[in-house]
Amino acid sequence: MQLLLHHRYTVGELAEDCGVRELQNVASELLMQRCGFFTSEKEGRKVYYQIAGPQLERFLDRIESRFESHVVG
Image (cartoon, rainbow, N blue to C red; front, side, top):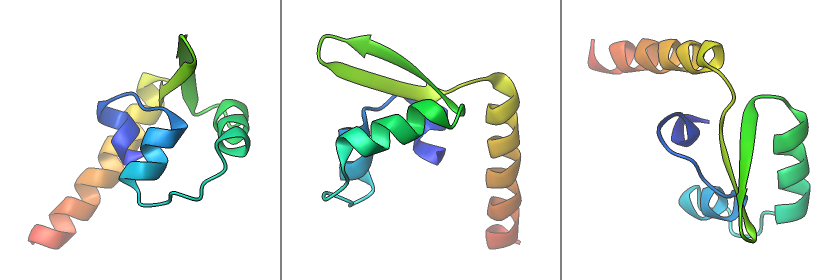
């Protein structure tokens, strides 16, 4: 989810960036579409995902900043 805060990704790109090459693309795409946290945009044969709304983005930013303050301080 942290990756999706700053950029859009396909399921395959997420799997590669997270080091999970054996991820099942079809099952993962269904999960991402059904959970409601993400929006999707199709370009050709690729489907790109992003965080669905500003509320979720703010929530994730707060979580991220909380962990950063504990690591630094």
